[in-house]
Amino acid sequence: MAGPADRADVDGGAGKRLITDAQLRAELELCHRFAIPHSQFLGAGDGRWSEADRAKALAFAAYQRSVCNGCGTRFAEWDEEHGGDRFAYVTTTVRCPGCELIAHEQDQVPDGADGYGVRIGLVPRV
Image (cartoon, rainbow, N blue to C red; front, side, top):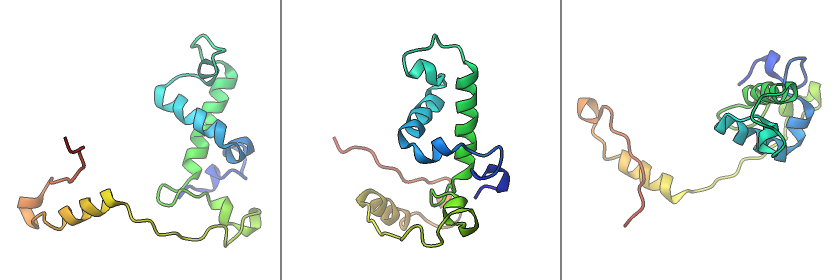
């Protein structure tokens, strides 16, 4: 999980709009993936990175660092001292047939040298 410097409630962390605006997060995620400025994504830019584009990209990077890569939540959401709630989330169980098939096949991979480097993936049936 991220450190205090990456928390949204600490100077330098992700801005409130990124935390509350799922549409902006989705837009900036695509901008990050395609390495384009937000203004170009919106159809208003010419491909050059404006000061606002750079600020949004830096805020999005800070937001990404504030999100746990294991559970997808942010520390501040749990921290009651910063307006969070210790019971902000509940768990849910979902069974993915693809993950189930991969886990079953992983059981067949031999231990030791014969199993080194073996990865199980899914491809569409033709």
